[in-house]
Length: 560
Image (tube, rainbow, N blue to C red; front, side, top):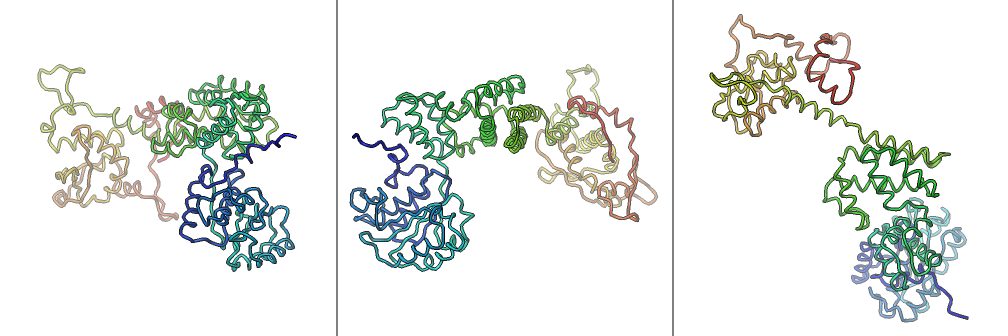
């Protein structure tokens, strides 16, 4: 009878700390604890399935009980190491929490704790899926766990730490194991394939890693199954047929269709995948993950190091992210996330996915509120720029005539500059212009233009200092002066009116302006009636017309 076959997941199970894949943060801490002789009596290893929780616990047990130990490099050849690796050590007991979850089993364990180890340095209990223990079993374990004999160590492993009693958690050192990064998983699978003399393409390795979702044991089991199915040569199509996944180029093509707004192409990809028997729910999950990568890339290259993406795909994703802005990616993600919740229970998964793709394309073409406001500001600032104050004698009119902005700054007096800014603001917000009648530029303080207000009308400053008004004024000044400036309004006694005179003011009284600038107080006694809106003037405003044309909008309601 020939040698019994050993599956890859067991054959390639790590036997030393350095062989554990993708858990450097845990391994480094355990090594330091051994070298510094700072060993706790209870450890809890947390993480999803197949990431190395029990394997790490076994290696830790070997490191403590090796004849050369405690050591960070157990020999693997002494009787203690061999017995632990084969699961037959009398001093390292592995207990399945799911099948030994009652209080009787824990009481039996508690009774054996006081006996010294037969051969090793420590008596070690490895309890897998510890969250499956009953509350009574946990309570029976508490006293022993809090004050165990010096020769006893507890290693717990669980995928659901929230189900473990807080009183147990507080008595353990906790280590959270991560999902295995895709590049590290691909490298490990390539190493196994080479040792097993299997030819496998990079695309197939990437597909296995994608299907395993961070679980290395799942990836090894899949590779084992593929070898049995395909022999010594494995291609991407073999992996896709096993997982029901879409090919990477199909997924990339679907993302391109969303970016380009090509509904027909997107629906064609879904139809082809559905007819090929692919899992559409899994396709939506992959699509969500893909757009999450695009979101990270849209935030800047510095964030790219956080991505768990195969190197072969990273450059493609970079090119796609350059065609998108963060707001667009977020809107698409919102649509796909909502669809993911619905597709789980839908009778027609294809219908849900197709609707989601159409909505995603529509959201891709939408314009965010911030972009609308930004564009309107640009239109007001650039489209409403004032004409030159005068044309020099003999200077022909037309495009060749220089504007004030083209003149040297020395030719523009401060009073004329401010008057032009006020006039420009009036074309955007006539009410704000009326508040600035009688103001006077007082001079510069660095890059700050000081503007004086008659103290009698200082209450108008609150309205004028609205961010929208300041942006229009400073944009005009920046254009004329070709440098960054800001504005500071302040009362100025020199501008105080003589008795009996009034400022020219084509609009509301100061009290009405103050009401415009401040929210009205609650209650009927303090209510300020809003001035009526001239709808014809509003509809015929050239800026409003231009905005409606650009954004294909219509006026629904106008509020004062």
